[in-house]
Image (cartoon, rainbow, N blue to C red; front, side):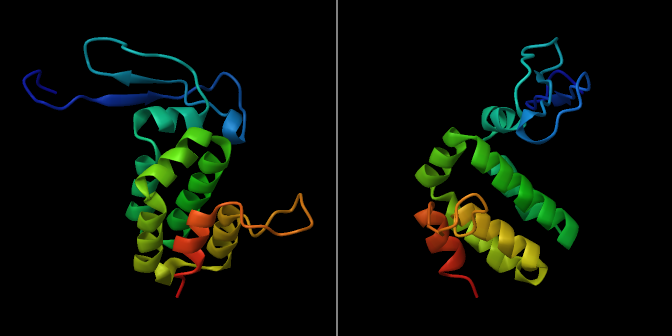
Length: 150
């Protein structure tokens, strides 16, 4: 890449030292630029996503999904990251990103299946396998994802 361009390459370095699953899995680090390593701090995936773009990164994955498998995987990643990172939850509420997610669900309604609906109910809080009672723990998601669901 020529040095006179205004773009900065971002490389993601995978941590393969320990095979963890879920939120304990770390990306390893992010190398920004081409003049050397600027930052290398192992973090959980949810923290790394928070640092490199927040919920917009995951919303971008959902927007780019073209088939059922990629749509399901991106929604599952969204739910997992949201459940493990309070800052991303606050950012979603601050930017009203649940409205964007609702719009993406509307545009991709042909890809929605029972698994996506289950993940959405998990996100809203109406399905919780730990508790016996159901409660809406995320009113904004409930309003924009389930109340406007067609």
